[in-house]
Every structure is written in C-alpha cells, then in structure tokens.
Length: 240
Image 1 (cartoon, one colour):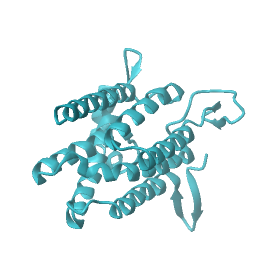
Image 2: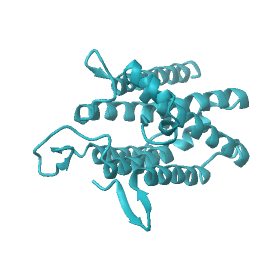
Image 3: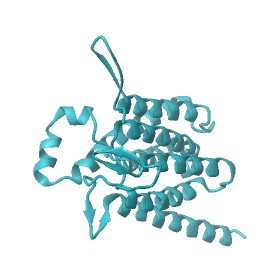
C-alpha cells in the first residue's frame, strides 16, 4: 500500500492522518450546509466540536479495551497513542452518540434533529476507509480472487474498499429514499458491518464467543433500529 504519499526535504505526508482529516473536514462542511434552523450555527459548532472530542476518546478507548490487560495499561499511559493511530470506528460512533444524546437533553431538542448528520457521516466514513486502504490497516482475509491486493505477506480481500463502496450506497439510500434516516442508518450499517467482519483479517479487534467486538456492537445497532421501528409504528397507530 502507500502509507507515505510523498516525502520532500524531510517532510512526510502520511495517507492515514491526511484522509482522517479530510473525512472530518468533509463531514463538517456537508453538515454545515444541512443543519436545521432550530439548531442554529453556533449550536452546530458546539455540537460538532463535542462530537469530535467524544468520538476521538471513544475510538481510542474501544481499541484499548480489545487488548490484553498489560498492553491496555501501557497504551493508556502512552501520550503517543492518544495522538497517533489506533482507532476503532464503532467506538468513535458510540462516543459521538453519547455526546449527541447529552446535547439533545440539555438543549431540549428532538432526536430527529441530528438526522441531517447521517449522510455526511457516511460520506466522511467512506473517505476514511480509503485512508485505511492506503495505510494498509483494517485489512482483509487471504483470498485468491483476481481483485485481491497483496498486503502483509498475502493476497487479501480489499475489505476497506468493500466498506467504502457500501457506505456510499447506504448514503445514497438515506439521501434519496429514506424517511427514517436514523433507523435505516442503524440497521443498514449494523448489517453491512456485521458481515464485513467475516472478511477482516486483522486480529487485534477482540473476539468473544467467536463473535468480534464490532459484530456485537453491530447486533446492538440492529436491535436498536428494530426497537425504534416498533416504537414509531406504535406511536403511529395510537395517533390514528
């Protein structure tokens, strides 16, 4: 892969931090053009900064929790870890969701307020997966399919590209077809991430009862989507 895009006079441009930065920048700009009037620009900025911080911490903490106890302690005490690589997307999603819920409670806003952010989130996430592909992280299982990529001493599924493409498709669906964006995001990403885990070849993500940490979280997302769907249907029936 291409973890270093280029090097000039001692300056090295690394693919992963560049694409992570681009993904956040894209998400911010798209969200800026979509936030509802009831939120307002100042509250949008506060919310976005809060989501960034909580997502960063959440992505790091979930990575730490999937390591053995000795390595977890070492990582927690290492400042380079907190400012460098070692992120778990679903941990970041949980962190951002926690801050968003707290923000909604404090500001007394309905939960649908932040549905505007789901398409920007998917597009930024897709861009971030391209950074993973270039950096060679989050890599796939060995395969001999003609579209395999040689990485870590084996031909592997380009699972990062699979996910990037599926995220774009889910973003298109939410933008063009969905009237219940939160439910469809939770169910859609939960399902695709659950099955994509079978194509993942990195073994540092934790596994419990032959199910990865990400798959357990994905199942929780699917379950939450079903609960919200049932609640919406009950509410609809009682108001008829």
